[in-house]
Amino acid sequence: MLLLIVCVFSLAAGSPVDGPNAYDTIVIGLGSAGATAAAELARSGRKVLALEAQGRVGGRVHTVPFGDGVVELGAEWIHGNVSSRTYALATEHNIDTKVQSLMLDPYRSDGTKPDVALVRELVDLDFTEENPDPPEPLGTFVTKKFMEYITKNKPDLLKDQDFITEYLEFWNLLTNNLESSNDWNDVTTWDVYEQLGGPQAISWHRHGYKTFFEIMLNKYNNGPGLQNLDMKLNTEVTRIITPQHPNETVTVQCKDGASYTARHAIVTVSLGVLKATHTTLFSPPLPPEKQTAIDKVSIGVVGKVILSFEKAWWPKDITLFAFIWKGDDKKKVPAEDYWTTRILGGHPPMGSGNSLTLWTSGEVAKQVERLPEDILKTKCVALLQRFMGDALKITVPAPTGVLRSTWYSNPYTRGSYTYDNLEAPRYPLARKWLSYPLLDSAGEPRVLFAGEATNERHFSTVHGASETGRREAERLLLMIRGEAGNHNVKDF
Image (cartoon, rainbow, N blue to C red):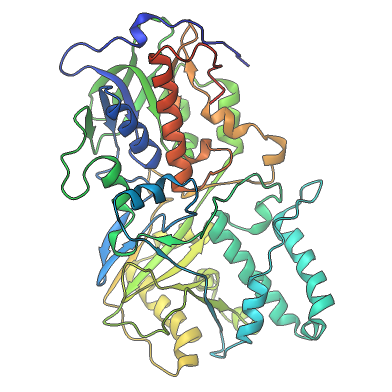
């Protein structure tokens, strides 16, 4: 592993670029990390080119007009309001956000209601603060602690093994929708993620998460953008050539045949894209430690199916309509409809008053992305009728619209966000390896890396991704100002 101290860089590192189309830095990807890095550098006077493969800014944040407002196909909430860049930008611009507290309303697959108070009590149980040594699969550990809890505190519940089994399966689905995993036994109890302080579900509601990007890029309220930033959408990068000689530039080649050069490049594509393309994307090939990290860190899928209706028909002031099956009902579901048993439940998004989001994850989320729309709509309405319509003694109306996320099948995301899998304890430095820059022969960082997967403590979040974009921008700015002399390039 290289451990190079950056003492002196060539004057070219801080020299202005020449020519109208020359750039100091090329940023690849305009999600949270890329937009943050590009904005930070441009506001500091650097000439920046941002290349985005999709036809929009936002990455895995995607606000869409739908129903009577807007919905989020990707990231839904600001997670915490303490030391949160996303929350700070909202408050600095007098944008009202709304806290969405967890209020769960459970339903069973035979159209009955379970003991609501009991289910809410069980959902509030949190065993994740305990970190067993050695680490265990999360599902195994939680199941053990859960059984200990009810044996001690709810012994009568032991008589209803069907409820215990299906409630634990609901908890499995809830975990997967939080972690982006396929099964909670794919997740380790080795937990290094750190929550920010404050409420964990703060909504942009009718402003939409897109507002975060509009503010960063000076587009909010019809702003003019950033003078030093050029953005090219629908521009897929196919090759990134890292120079070895200090006098050479980074070359970025695109699918449309265009080629761009700059002193530095910041790569912010998702881990899913790196897994699929890194062997052809980088020249020379990535160092072994970075290739190992790409292989060992997991990225999963969280899927949404969003239905709009003429008007809301569900109870108000509920955050999640939880679907808890009965074992006999589940056994009768045809194999081709198995995916319906992996829907966590329904969630009313705060940005659209007549829409309902159904959440799923893992392999089923991938399957849902491929289903014909008519089948998807019909089966989802039948699912809502089964759990909610019968219990509420109503007929669930036909939807007026349907949307779904496609984070896995989208070649420019190939997943939702990362989680710590069972191998994470064996590779505790993997996320740091992902963040290490590629150096030239003089030890200068030339190709840098950002994105939620490179954040050791705040991965899987928009604020975590933004933090890494700022980290890499500051790495370059310190170097350019000659203030990086006492910093190892890997100390950021």
